Length: 253
Image 1 (cartoon, rainbow, N blue to C red):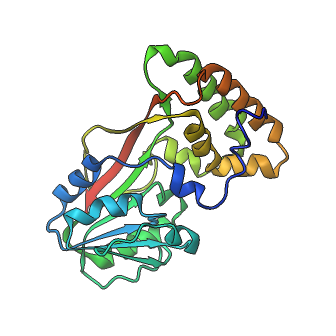
Image 2: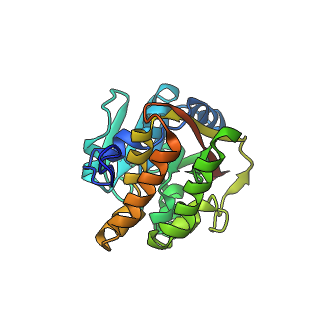
């Protein structure tokens, strides 16, 4: 990898919190609007609390749960949020207490029947459960066609074999999983950001597929991609628009 792109694929544990795209506030507002009341929201597999924090202004209490102590350690503290290490299949939440249960970019790791059982246990009548994910990044605008073409080839053909099988569930917006709730259609939403080259490569560094490729000794594949992107990007400090479609399975318990 050339010196001007640096080894962005050798990131520490804080990279996830630093480079993962943030959900729009409109998503949290929509989710809150569907809940039967605003007493308690539970965000399962919350990671560093990206969605959890957005839910906080809309509810009296929010609980963020994740099995990873490292993710919880990188969550931004908020007086309205209680963070705790816990798996999706054993939620430390009282019976019949949650008005909204969310899982953002996490449900593909769950034992879904066990998780759904816990959702039913903690839910108040007519509570809402939402499995949220975002799709594959796109470089927006026609001027960025070459960047997008190179990225899509990398995602699909080069790094693709290193994704775990569960990744396909995310790419399809969880469309194929069992969802035994009274489902309804969400509005069209997207994540939109403007990123410099370093931020984009930092994001790619957080992928599980990137870790797997490095462990398999495929540093050259990552380096070639970073160098290609740098050449197409131009000035690395130029902020370029990127977006991800937000996908959702949402329903009432």
